[in-house]
Amino acid sequence: MSEVVLDASALLAMIKGERGAAKGAGATAGARISAINYAEVISLFIHAGTPKREADNMLDPLTITVVPVDKALAQLAGRLRAVTAEARLSLAERVCLALPCARAARVDERSRLEEGGWSGT
Image 1 (tube, rainbow, N blue to C red):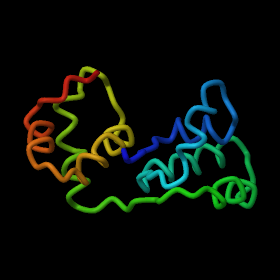
Image 2: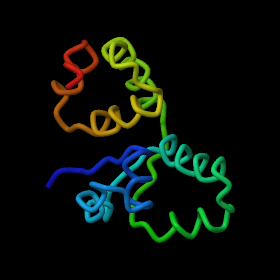
Image 3: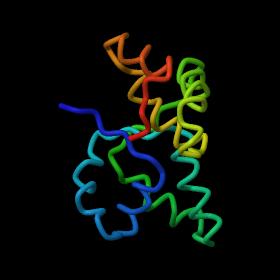
Image 4: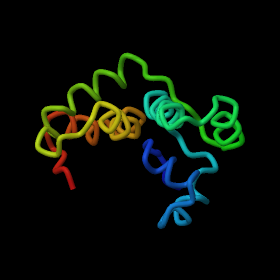
């Protein structure tokens, strides 16, 4: 079974019930999201004027795991900048991409990514 990793926009789409979100709604059970992406979701709610308690009430029931960004994940996300520069990805997007790679059991997949083997597609 594949691990599901959410980015901030995917989680927001599911919470807001946006078009295409139904596909991913079932995927939230057991899904993972980096602490940076989770913080981005919260900050977007607060910036839009959503009261803190209301934002918490939308997020707390979700069965997702918020993964802390440790040194290894931070290093991998930082290294992704070189191979994703053309795509102009944000730090949060690179952390989202790095999360499954940091957890990869196969070292060769991780090293290919670190050496610039990611094609951006």
